[in-house]
Length: 229
Image 1: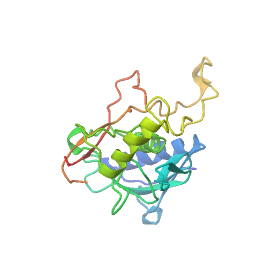
Image 2: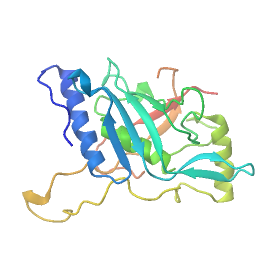
Image 3: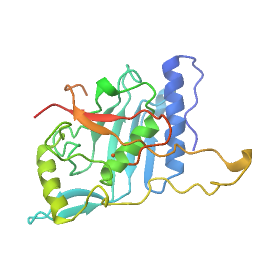
Image 4: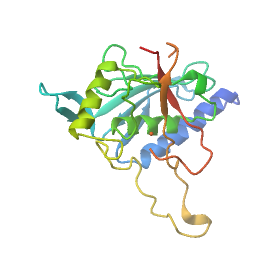
């Protein structure tokens, strides 16, 4: 699969085209992630994406509080006119129970604009979202940084105590990317490098404007945010 082509030299279009290439490569290198642009008919680099995660996540609870699991999760990503100077808009499209994703209404995932950096690329955002689904990345404590969905946070703390998951034992421990078969082979023909490990985000309060293991590089961290309850 190839990223949509274009001939403009606009800096934002170049960034959108680079993001599209990275996200489509990520999708090709994963059995658990499928990303597709929704606005390819415009002839410009895509600004609206739908990403599907086929990994285990929690979509609800039984009456006794036990988690209900699902393995099909979708999120819509919109790259607004100010992107990449401001973070993308994120809206969950399928049922989800996670302290840092709204489980009702617009089902937002708020990235903290104060800590967003232009260097945060779209493929890193996609990996961040996948690790949130897997419960590799969550913050349920009612202390700074505060969770986005208070009811889900209360349930998550109880579920941790009941042993359903923990920071060291996520709901789905599988890597989102397939192992690189050329890893360790010498020479320039070892293959195109993947996006590498994703930095763990930090959840913290922010305005209403719409962790995985740290990388050994200087990759900037992404934070998601929500107002103080």
